[in-house]
Image 1 (cartoon, rainbow, N blue to C red):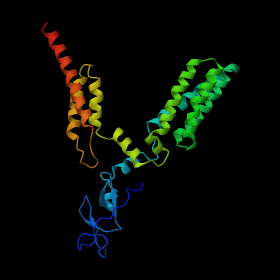
Image 2 (cartoon, one colour):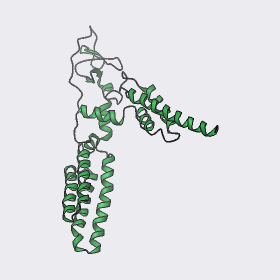
Image 3 (cartoon, rainbow, N blue to C red):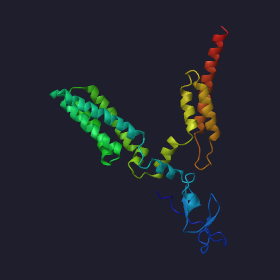
Image 4 (cartoon, rainbow, N blue to C red):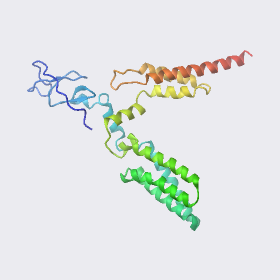
Length: 263
């Protein structure tokens, strides 16, 4: 994936490029400080770097995130793969019963499983075909008069659409995504995991002992916050919310224990 459009800094006095001494320097690398020329620098997130530094994961962290999931199965791939095993097993089970009236269900189970196997293998057409699985399921459900099947089919359709839109799943299928989409996905999955965990634990702090863990995670997450770092570390608000919720949960259970002791 290419970096952001190349800017043209002004010539830095009479300095020469570190890599190409015969060419005038245009600026210095934002990381290591060496002089670069117009042939060997890239601009990443608004900062200019020499070629060596520009490809470091701590510099172009979005590219590193893209490469981490490029062609690698994500959670959804394994989720669909598990569904494939269930569908194929149910399809063959119906076939072995010999019940003619249930054959449409057996055929659906087998074909749905095949689509999901190809999805798990990363075959491109299976991404779109996956959306058709819950639609066919609803049609088969109507044949048997099962409105519950229609409701499950609608839920499955929404899940299939969400899977198709998920950035990490697109990367598994080796589809190019924008840096904006990478940024949103990186923020969701990679940015300050301690603060995010602290908030989730803080919400569950009414469970005995969880509040203390929420406090520890949230404080750790708050200490990590550094918007100027590369990559930037955020989630300050989540860390503070986790501290508040964790403290409330801890105080609640502390008061409960003390009241029980001194009855």
